[in-house]
Image (cartoon, rainbow, N blue to C red):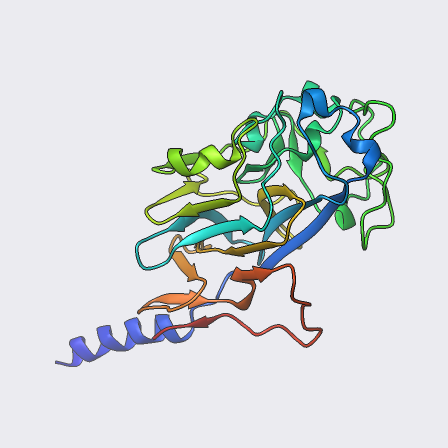
Length: 283
């Protein structure tokens, strides 16, 4: 009996003292397009002036890893806009990892919409513009006349800081049962909602960390460009340093699931300047 109580105490203690690994979700207004950026629309497809490119980053505590973004019958994952999601007609892809570097240099190829587990092209990781303190990647040159706007809240144009960090090979996602949903992010497809109710995109193995894994540890998981308002609800699987995994859901948590306010986003609502609510776990 004493042994049973000891085991139960250890299990309960592990729940009480488990450290939540999710700091939050960062939605970066990466770029806002202008009329000049639509000059190549015969090749790129129409990109209305004022379209915003959003980058969605998972902000983790050091030592934690992004393992998957998922949807289930109980917890739908969705990303939707009031206008069509922009997909580059010529170079568009559903996967940031395989986006070719040559396409970055072509009109507005850099603004294509896709999913990721850290990569922003075949040779680059995605990094927050605020953390992109290195000199502009000299190997990335843009076509003349494009990317001259300074996006809201950013001090630099993409010609000065592009949110790309060169590596030999970027991390790649594995897709599970989301092929039909991915069509909305395919080349030249017109759609406004990506929804997953029984599938995921994942970083296999131990999971993925940010280039800045020892400090802010931010992992890029999606890039969406649209002229409309953006909303999403995310569910995440996060790997802990002890080898366990933590489930975070947008709402309605069940036993063993965490919730975090940043998992729900609406671009029409101003974010409170008050201190963020800490992740909460359903006991």
